[in-house]
Image 1 (cartoon, rainbow, N blue to C red):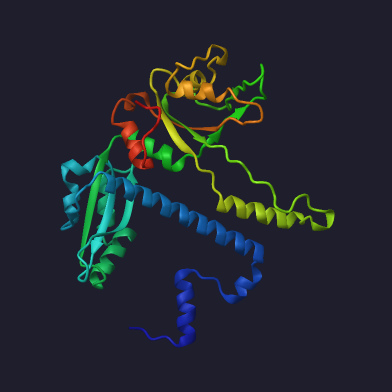
Image 2 (cartoon, rainbow, N blue to C red):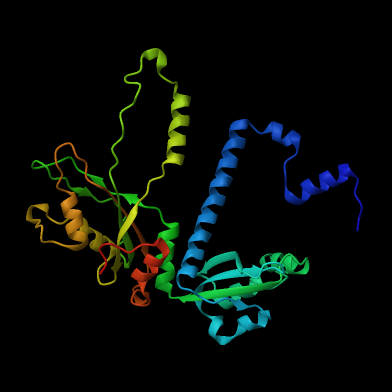
Length: 324
């Protein structure tokens, strides 16, 4: 093995991992360094949350682990062209329980090809696994998978990758009635859409009363406090409905849900339309629930395949209130 002096080893290590030197760190402004660290930590947290969500789905359907023996197993016909959610696991000589190393939704690349990458030592993913087995960090390597349809893959994409869009309200008209104001840009194409809501929370009054001019914080302090509050109090939106725009377009379906005439509203209405219409009738001084939507385009031919409502319910961990 090639020998390095302590100084050479430090330089070699930095070259390998791309770590900046002390001089380079000094040249980076503190604000940019902080911003970069926050951005990287946010991205890592997001990846971790997605993987945990995928693990939750795999665990909820109670799949059995299969022992990896040869990567040629993944060339078998029943794996070659399927989409799936899959997990890679391992155990050690000291603990037989199988733990997750990785989990993924293979929605673009067939499962067989993706698994071969994880068990091929010439690929980056496979090199990690091979090294841990060779160094006896791991004893055996396992895999499990759940086959999914294209529409189910898009449904999981809707949940994990697409942001909620808030629906604005008009000012009350006719006494205590508000109207929904749908955003522009909703596709005139088939697809999947979800509707969710956020409960209104009463904000407690400030214990300090009205601050004097000398007590007012500067803009930088206010910005930092607002940023901290956003990080500490993320918006929690509850899914309540998954819609399939197959016969109508996404735009038409959402219009029918949100533009119902509240003048003809009846308490006998049930389902999502009744919920949305009743939310438009508010008492004085009370705000309606905040409503959100998200949507994804899906080719019409794929929408009839799969169990989409059950797929989303497994992913979010609770039943959809207005889907029968």
